[in-house]
Amino acid sequence: MPPSSPAPAVARPAAAVNSAIRAIVVRAQGRPWTTAERALYGLLLDEWERAVREEEPAAA
Image (cartoon, rainbow, N blue to C red; front, side, top):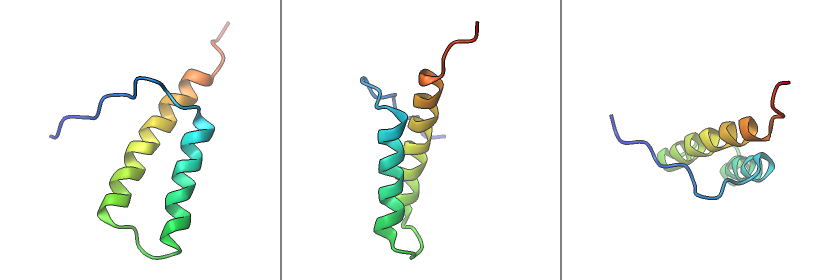
């Protein structure tokens, strides 16, 4: 199993990561994604999940 990428030092807000994900979709223009696009999508999805968890208010 390949080593996972370290989390970015400065986390981007979920909205910024979501914009990057949307950009992949727009650039593809309906064609199948390349291997590189799929890999980038996976990394961005992981980053987005972390950002959403960090932005959630703590349970009381």
